[in-house]
Image (cartoon, rainbow, N blue to C red; front, side, top):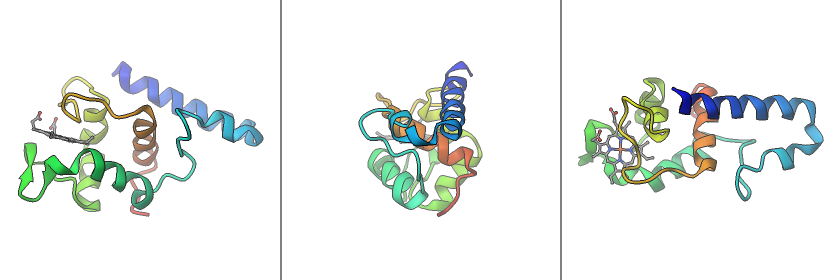
Length: 122
Ligand code: HEC
């Protein structure tokens, strides 16, 4: 719960400061290196991330945990039921994903933004 709250507050802070200091957006949005958090989209951000980190274990023919992450519809389902964020944030009650590792802060932030945005297809 706490783990989930911290990125949430962080995100809220980013959005808040962005509104106040629009000119400094570039500085404030640096999570690590050049993390793009300004235009997070399914096709440009989320799908490539999941293809890279998750799909090998969550595709047709190899759906670990009976979870598919190989299409928008499948990913959206896991976003809506809370498991996508629960797993990547290693929350209790969810299996930590990816197994044996943690996504980068940049990827976690991008997933948070996308899900908070309602997990849109575009
Ligand atoms: C090396 C293989 C592997 C990778 C990579 C992997 N998973 Fe999994 N995943 C599993 C296995 C095995 C299970 C089922 C066993 C379990 O729940 O621990 C699972 C279960 C899940 C579940 C259901 C867990 C639950 O609590 O009900 C979700 C959601 C999930 N994975 C999402 C992801 C996401 C998102 C990624 C990428 C960040 C990812 N997985 C990467 C192997 C993998």
